[in-house]
Amino acid sequence: MDISQQHLNLEQWYDVIERALEDPGAGPILNVVDDGGVYDAIFLGGGAGGRFGAAYLRAMGGRPLIIDAWPFLGGSCPHQACVPHHLFSDVAAELDLWRWFSGQLFFPEWDPSRASILEMIRLFLRGRSSAHAFMNWQTKEQLEVEYVLNARGRLVDASTVEVAGRTFTARNLVLGLGASPTYPDVPGIGLAGVFDFATLVEELDYEPRRAVIVGGGKTALEYGSFFHATGCPTTIVSRSPLMRTPSLHHVDEDLRRYVVDGMRKRGMEILEGAEPVAIEGNGKVERVVVRLADGSTAAIETDFVFLGTGERPNSAMAREALGVAVGPRDEVLVDKSMRTSVPSVYAIGDLIGGPMEMFKARKCGITASKNIMGEPAEFDFSEFPDFLHTTYEVTWVGLTEQEARERFSDVIIIQMPPYVENLDTEHLPLPCAERTMLYAFAKPELSGFQKLVIDAASRRVVGAHHVGYGAKDAFQYLDHLIHRPDGLTIDELGGMNELFLNPEHFVQLSRLRAGRSALVSL
Ligand code: COM
Image (cartoon, rainbow, N blue to C red; front, side, top):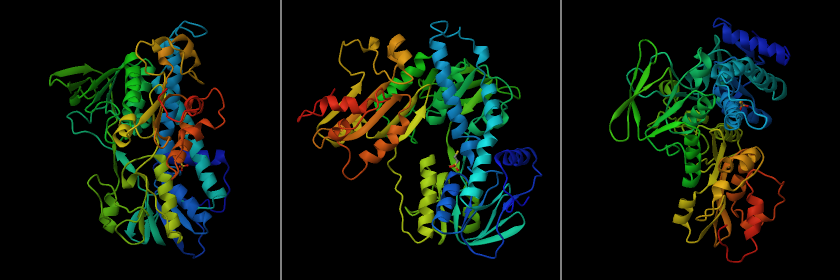
């Protein structure tokens, strides 16, 4: 359908998208102005990187065209990945309260029949096209970007893409083709009942009774914590210690311990140093055979396996059609300007490898656009703040305590609860902050953890680590402040205006120490 001359509202967009998702025969959605003009760039892939890159290029006065196989813009994030994950993590946090306070205060008795994984997925599926509708509407009506959706583009050469029976040319190509989940090579991996984050929302049609998660990184912890919080007993099987997978950097050991202990306290079974050797069942998963850390094997009865074993870039078409150079994990190789090995071809987002994060995808797209429009730009994403969810929100930026001690001779720590032997912090109602007040007063050891790492000589904050709720926002700004050339000193931090009570207490805690010329830990 050609919608270039129409101005669909959100309800109409919702219907167009839902119809296209249901009917594989629904044709392309064309929002193209046929005026014979030349495109500055074709963005092949309209996920976060492509959409933001195209919008930025347009804002700079250029002419972009986005092509995407899905009938909506925004990519996997709002459809199968970050958005459902955040819904599930919100739910996990709510259920966590209910379970700990079952039958106490104003909480009803815990009733696992009320907490359904399937129901949450259906809730998400009913709502997701509303977000898609908005992205399509905004990109056309407000950002003035042309696009072809619901049609798979084929790369012809470095300036030509065929899609929907038409041929489009541009001065540049920006490839944002994303990545796909990888499955370990284990017998039985193809059985019904084995899911990844994408097939979970697309295909789950029963209520799991017992979950086995494979992996030890973000996805494994996040989805595992959600499943367990609904009352579905969950085992995590991970080769590495949790949060020590190669995809996660700067994970402080005290933060990690608080997080993993917290998962165990909630009854999750965590098998580190373990790996699945077979998934067994008669057409459908019935058990997972696991090799444990001591070399013995164990069988875990289960009707549901979830893989959090990473993703691989979708680089085959770019490699075959254009000959772009690709690295050992199938990632398209780019320089800091997002240029591939082929002139006028750029690559962005998950296609260029980790970190497969939103901030990187969007900023890659913008970096490519600046370069295309003649404004030299580089993006170094080697240092970045990070987060994950269990039933908590876990956030960190900069160096761990150990990394700081390796780099600086005098490191001080500002931490809550403080580590002082025999202080009985188990019963200390601190930290207390929004969303942990009930824990602080009724179950203090569950009320979170926070740590600031400071190089005493320069007085600069070099790392911040937090378990609780609501600090993610602050960490975006902390990341900016501590990575500025001048950094952020304890004195500057202590001089800020805090909005009490705040999630991480860093401003007020810094203020308690900033008066000292010789800094000491708190
Ligand atoms: C976010 C999708 S869910 S996008 O980055 O706004 O395109």
